[in-house]
Amino acid sequence: MFTVKCPEEFANQTGKYFGNCTRSGSTKRLSNSRLSPHARYLEAYKFIHRKDKELGQAFNDLRRSTALWQIRIIYGLGLVTDTELAKFTDATRNFVLTEF
Image (cartoon, rainbow, N blue to C red; front, top):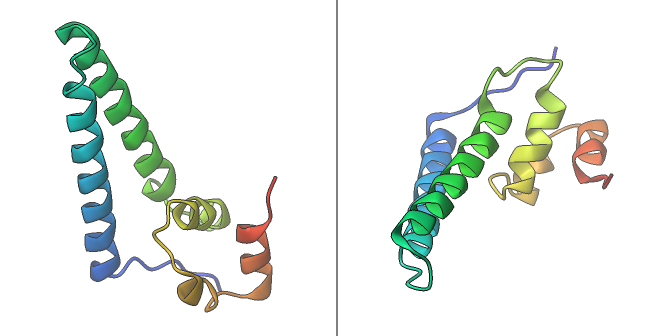
């Protein structure tokens, strides 16, 4: 049986990653003095929306039928190390590492 577990430390790491990434990305967009205040707001909004979509694709609605894709997304975000990936089966590693 294939199960996906999300230990607390992994969840904390993920929260920190997205929090830091979103905060720094939003600050960068809101600080762009070449844009009008409204344009800066729109850029920050679009950025946060993209990050929210990434987070949702990686962690929302975990099921066995989507687990491989979600592991691949999580790996692509840099949230799973090669050492951690090595703990999965050969088939899972091959799927995660294969480029489309």
